[in-house]
Image 1 (tube, rainbow, N blue to C red):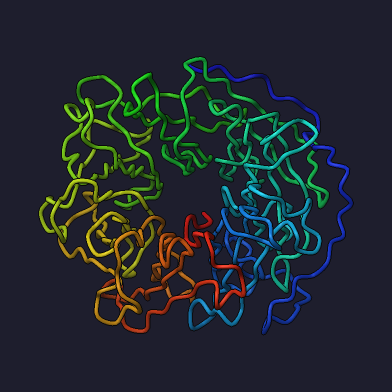
Image 2 (image 1 turned 45 degrees about the horizontal axis):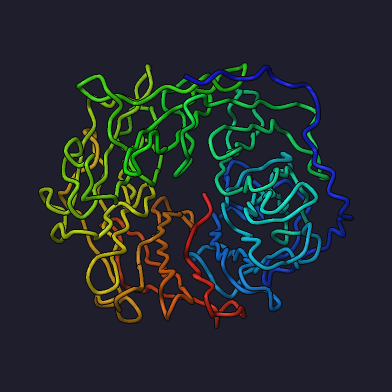
Length: 487
């Protein structure tokens, strides 16, 4: 069990010695407004026009000749959905962004969004896991890029790490102390949680202190997510961790948020009373519409000793863990793979069903659905969508999409890894989420992104489109665009 340090009532500002020349990054077609936007509650609307936007990372991309410097691209939403004609590409060489592009910085190691300064515009929090600093090699850095009426413009440093810490490799944003201001939650020393309490000033500072939650069990983070899993109105933090000497030992742990910050973590347990077998990827959302956020964990590891205790491990699997007033209930988990009733396809070893996960209402019926990436499936990978119901996810009405689906641009090839990352986003504000799919292996690891529309009958390939380095004006070689989406 972990024990939190007391809240520290001091600024966690990192002195970077970098002067911030905060300049506007123009977004074509988005005029400035003079009033606070009506979309202030959208956590991913960077220009305040009422439509959710899509951030996609390419942390291994070459920027100005620096291999692995990384960038994040933003495609803006509109009444007709995501439009590549209104886009931005941001790196540490962009005006007003702290630092400078350097080899293997990994800008975009993690990407989250929230209105950190509470000005009505969502801001983009970006991890730079490979950043070198005075603190040492691969110390890591976390930055914020500020939202505004013309989109993202300028930024500030939020926190830096110590040598080889790679701060910014994992992170999320949520109000974990219930004060109405988003907090930034980071993984520190590969095993502890570091909370920066908002709101934040435009120079990245905060006077509201923070918290470090120590993990004495020396777990290792594989993924991090957030959501209100006990329905008390305060954000909780969920992690998929490797909790032992065995490389395949996986657990799901939860830190519940309180008005005093995060509680020590608890392990999600199954019917045996032991920690249930977890995985490597997470999504959190209320699938069964009962007012509690649920956890979906994807496990792609198979063929190891722990498979004895892991139902349906062949080809990868997901576990839906319902939230309750007492927190996530692992005893009622629903386990699914591609051999489950109604799920398209067949479970084939190393298909990696569950590698990419996202939760949102695709068809507008009020239940949130689940997009599941299967990047190792034959033909270059695919994505399966599972409908949400009062009883959780179901294979009934499930759909499957790949580059070989009629209407989807391109053609699947081995190694494309279509579905490594997925993101459901309602970019035209019609109550139905569209599906963004990352294929970081496309065109020999140049990477690409596909967008498929959501309708009342689910995702449709009709009208789908793709974009890559040619659209963004970036270097293709080794970029692995689509490696990660913002959350």
